[in-house]
Length: 86
Image 1 (cartoon, rainbow, N blue to C red):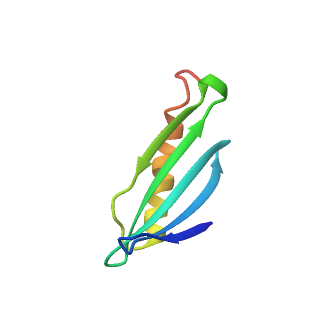
Image 2 (cartoon, rainbow, N blue to C red):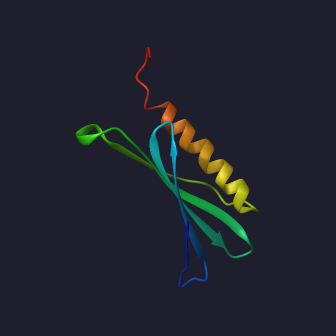
């Protein structure tokens, strides 16, 4: 996990995980008032079939809640990568 500050006073922290065999990158953003949001990317496929799906969450009162929302969003995106009938 990485951490860095920004000029706006916002703190950013990163996390990389693998969900269902696909890399998921999460960047946590701490906003004024101790609120959190997450920007993420789900990457699936190989070669020219690779697809990156970016997403972001709303603001949450805790980092854990923001991470939970981001993981739910990543799971939903992964569900859309499965062809119908499989």
